[in-house]
Length: 453
Ligand code: SAH
Ligand code: SF4
Ligand code: F3S
Image (cartoon, rainbow, N blue to C red; front, side):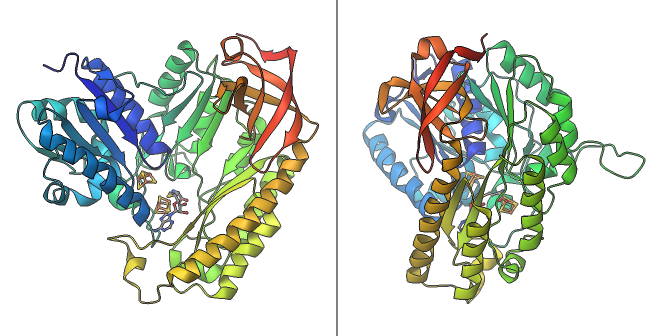
């Protein structure tokens, strides 16, 4: 019944959504559907959605509107909304877009096969009830053949006052170390070289798994997991995201320092550089603690690259408090910073507060912060000039097909002349000749392919 039908998935939002989309695509492949690049040629359209800010949510509705119109003339079209908007809106989405066939929350991603069967049998289905996430058995259809995401913990138990994630992703659910290692071994067997371990709050890994040590510590932590998976043969690089300053430990920093495959790149969102604002956000740390974490990282790994997320114009944020964020950014010097103006989200405490700031203040602060970020990132980039960097080649440079692109261990995008067929999946020593704020260009030392497989 599904044979030769064509599907398309459009993914919005974060790495968790990208990983979920790859697993859902794997399920559809397994069912005999065929990937179609052009959403307007596909018979099954799946939007994997994000609702972190209002503009992310609105974007989904505009895409959906166009497909819903198409369905009016093509009733065989199957329209699916998955991910975080699906979870947030649930049945209300059906009232808003009656043409939808299936609305499914992120916890149901691995159940897509069953749910689609119900749709094809003629039902309109909503799957948003909280469930225990089933360990998936299908092979994801991965975007890359070099780097892969591996989920280690789903959900989030924090209650940051601005954030919808706990509402839409549910409570923390860790996968077992054995399942994670088995997935990495499978990836290595398929030729993948780099793995990014994923969790919304990856430092929470293991606290929901059974077992504790005689000293009362949890038996399973992110640090222990890194030691446990580190020697998977064939995997050359390991990354992890996203770290939470509240739970980030010295033991973890020590492990990253000790374990050669773990890349010296840390993504640790700070959100604000002001202690009062951090308190109102319910983040559970101070800006001093954040600085101590970065100091400790740099003590052991002076060259480590540091990235983060920050929010400007949180309700009640004064000019002075905003300047504390600027000060933190100026002092630390991030290699990259994702910035956003605060956006009130349904079902979160801060959305109900009366001290919301105007759009004008939001725009102004965001611009000022972004200008500083660019200056600082350009400064940080300078340290690469003339240096030899290890670049794992992933793809061609989409803007110049005579070049390939890859990343340094510090996660800087790097371009150099070369042939993808020859270099894909190889780690090449590249002499950096040009530095920009967020990317580098260099010359390969091709007699120095570091890991030739
Ligand atoms: N789990 C991660 C972040 C997840 S959401 C953490 O704890 O840091 C990704 C980023 O979106 C956040 O770091 C935050 O900077 C931003 N964000 C989340 N909710 C937001 C909101 N309501 N308005 C603006 N930015 C928001
Ligand atoms: Fe959201 Fe906070 Fe959880 Fe991050 S830690 S996902 S910001 S609630
Ligand atoms: Fe967006 Fe959901 Fe990720 S809201 S940022 S896709 S967890």
